[in-house]
Image 1 (cartoon, one colour):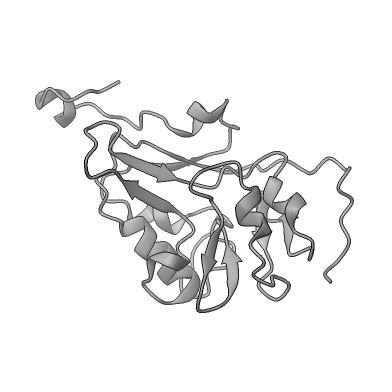
Image 2: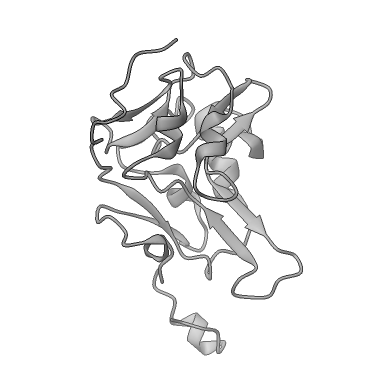
Length: 190
């Protein structure tokens, strides 16, 4: 079993958050591929720490969902992990991270996640779980701390970071400067 964790203690809050504009997202999946490449060196969706879901029968603006880890203040995934594999990295923006050497692949963290689909992903090949670590462990992408692969690659700038904790669930889905061309095409800008 991993290290012990005082489950009653208040955890330090994250200081960097990934936000999105699902109305701008085109569903190209560039963020998922890039995330997987940066972390695992393979372009496979199952190892991406971000999830783009499409409802092929839905209509704009609710046909695409951008699933990002919220770096929860009280992370259910961390509290559910009996191996002590999930911790808070205070040196890296307070990111909630999974230690691959301690993860046994039990998937309790996946089931505990308050979001559907879970923001924790299971990699069948590696038999372990992964989640957004705010690009802390990206052996296949050298970068400046604080830059996220998914944000850098998004061709329509539908992803961004903020240091202000988003307010409520809707605070993670924002208008990232829709205007200009959007208004010319009579598409929603707000």
